[in-house]
Length: 381
Image 1 (cartoon, rainbow, N blue to C red):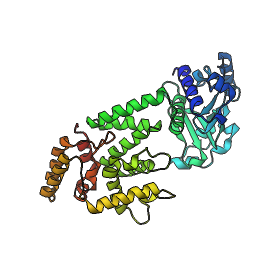
Image 2 (cartoon, rainbow, N blue to C red):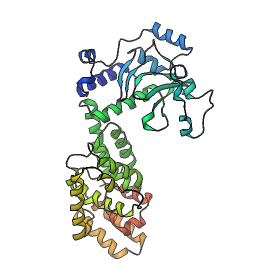
Image 3 (cartoon, one colour):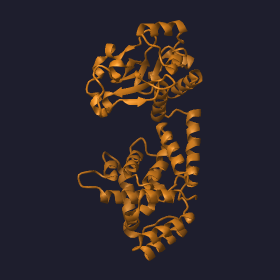
Image 4 (spheres, rainbow, N blue to C red):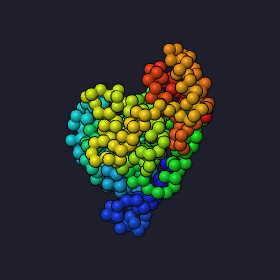
């Protein structure tokens, strides 16, 4: 990892996007969240004090900056060579019952908490640490983040570098700073859209998932469609819930044909299928003062009550309806007819990459499988 240029970019983006109250004068002046680099002697002294040689990526980090401010959104300061120490000595209470959340517990006298090297100095009810008992072939130690308010087991990363990359993505997800990183991910999202339409479902999905980590909302709009057609209803539902959340919803989303003609009809079906003890996605979206959601739902319900189902562009819609009329009692023939029709399908909007409307048909939904969804998405458009 070439730390210098990347950390400089991170610093510049932070200065451009953070609340002025969160900015230290010298950070603004120097556009640098770090400090002076540690020299080799300081790193060796820390290693001698700790009795271990530090992992390569973390060692190089310290030789680039001896400490760091604002690692992500919830860690305000990383430790430096003068105050590195073992978690068991500095904050032993972290062990607690967290091991029980991860299945098979580790021995009390030798687990990641008792042997972990604490690298965070100031954080929001959380801690970052490295595990010298979990080392890869390159000598990198596994890294962990743990925050009590998440009520989750510690998040494991392959190395200190991977942890820092995750914290950087978290910063982008929450503050969405302008600049080359954001522009690069937007370009990758657009390429993933084209790849999905060309039939590369897995490649596109992987890129979109990464882009979501960097706060690219368009990636969520696109990936929700793929997950739904692939039969991953739970994952798709989580993504739809996120898209309907205040502060996250894309501008103009509720009046876009992608929502009104594709996604909302499926959300009505999801609501009808939801058991009484669990709120549907639409019911959850209405919690609080959300008149814009209520207006969109009411308009969608009127369309649903007074118009026939529409499966897409006229040519595709006609072929699907013909297939449903001729093969409703023959699942294999019906599916074959839908696959034959797919080359005629066209997106309704620039963010439409999957024929979600097909899932609104109870006949098609009854024969839908993950393999069939993958087959359908693999057809180049």
